Each structure stands twice: as structure tokens, then as C-alpha cells.
Image 1 (cartoon, one colour):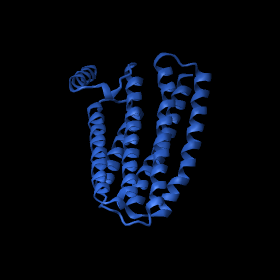
Image 2 (cartoon, rainbow, N blue to C red):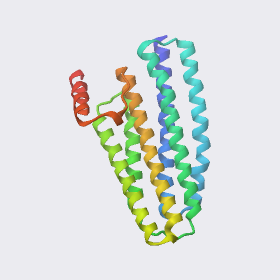
Image 3 (cartoon, one colour):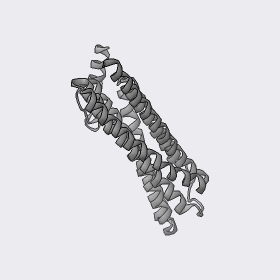
Image 4 (cartoon, rainbow, N blue to C red):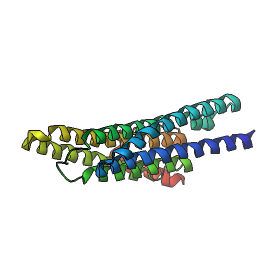
Amino acid sequence: MRIEYNKELKMIKDEILLMSTVTEKMLSDSVLALNSKDIELAKTVIERDDLVDAKEIELQLIVSQVIATQGPVATDLRRLASTYKIITNLERIADLAVNICQRVIEISEEIYMKPLIDIPLECELTEKLLKLSIQAFIDEDISRLREVVELEDRIDTINETIHHDCMSYMMEDPKNIHQGTVFCLIGSDLERMGDHATNIFETVFYIVTGNYIDFNDLDEAMINQTVEKLNAEN
């Protein structure tokens, strides 16, 4: 029974990794479409959302079946039940990539009011955070806690910069209001993606430790204390 359970758990992880790979590509392609004003690429991202939605439903059914047939308890039950949150966060990241692509199509015929620098950087950091969080789930390794917190903080800071810069452009020329608003919304979409990626790492933290921590509540002292505790346990 244990051998069968381990096979099923590996299969679930493999499927989540596949779902994550599709979602990561949607994220990067959405901003690539924005940079290049590539409407066709934007449309393919939107179409890929159906794949992610289908995978979410499939995985929910698989996990439910494993719980029903294997009767896991303690850590095993926590591990399986937590996968629901992980796949839900991945699905929401995909939805936000669709949002960005819809905005790309909306302004594709316009000349951009400013070079795109901060949005691609925010995208790069968000993708890095997502990859890190999924790898943490696959390995059940939370040793990169500090890096997760720092990445989320950098994403938040860049999003604030995008909003500030766009507001300046909109105040200088009312013609920039629509496009500036779109760029602000895209920045917010990427920031929310970062939040979902962090949620995944928080879930992994719960799987490994049995304790749930909202990383937004962590100050520097608490981060140091948590990292020191993790190092001591390892």
C-alpha cells in the first residue's frame, strides 16, 4: 500500500510540475506579447488557459481519489490536502496572464508612452519566484524562505514604481490616461501573481512544518529566527 501511495504522490507532483510549466510559459509569454505587441501570441496565451483549467479539475479529482482510497493521516493527509491550494494558486496565475493578454490586445495599436523596463523586470522576478516555490514543493524544501520574502518585496517595490511613473505620465498629458491605467493594471496583475507564488511557498512551509505562517507578517527578526531554526533541524 505504501509503495502504491508513493507512486501516486509522485504522479501528482509530476502533474503539478506540468501544470506549473504551462502557467510559467503563459506568464512569460504574456509580457513578451506586450513588449512585441504580438496579438497572435496573446491569443495563444488566452487559449492555453483552458488547458490549465482542465488540469486543475483533473488534479482535484486525482487527489480526492487518493485521499479516499489510501486514507492518509497526519503528514500524508496534510501533504495531499495542501495540493488543492497549490493547484488553485497556479490556476489563478494563469487567469492573470490572460488578463494581461487581453490588455495587450486592447492597446496593441497604440504607440507606448514610455519604454517598457519595469514591467519586464517585474515579470522576470515573478517567474523566478514561481519556479522557486514549485521546486520547493517538489523537493519539500523550505530552506530558501529568505529569498522568497526578498523576491516578493522586490516585486511589490517595482509595482509601486510602475504606478508612480504611470501617474506622472498621466498627469503630464491626459492622452496617456488610458494607456497609463492599462500599464498600472498589468503591474498589479504581476504583483498578484507574485502573491500567489508566495502562497504556494507558504503552503509548502505548512506541509513541511505543520505550521502556517503568513509571510506578510514576518519581520527581519522573525525571518532570522525561522531560518536559524530550519538550519538547526537540518
